[in-house]
Length: 130
Image (cartoon, rainbow, N blue to C red; front, side, top):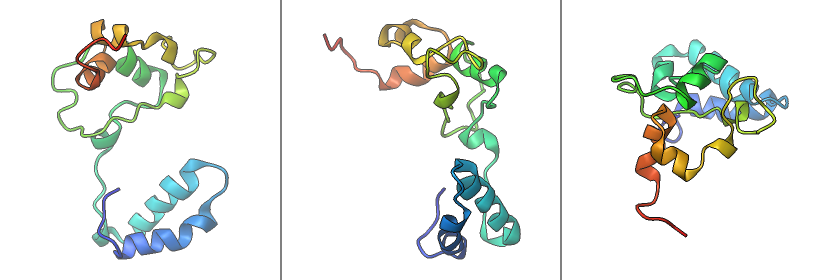
């Protein structure tokens, strides 16, 4: 979220956020923000999902991110990628992806043609650390 301090949307959100907390992230973060934006559409610009999270939070979306090659133009409208690591990070969780954090070694990220490798490589060190 980007906003100038003190804007009506941010003020309303901050006033209501504690009351919206219910042990889920989506209630106070997503649903409350959506209700406030719908109530004052002239005060808010909502980016399309592809700007922040172009990969669906589904097995197909995680497969595209973690296992498939980058499709040219796929990220042209994207300036941030939500990795949804809660869906695949643990080696014990394989319902969303065959990949887990244990698979994404530096060597793998340097060599893979998968989209995650293309995203990671610019941020890897230029040299071996060991």
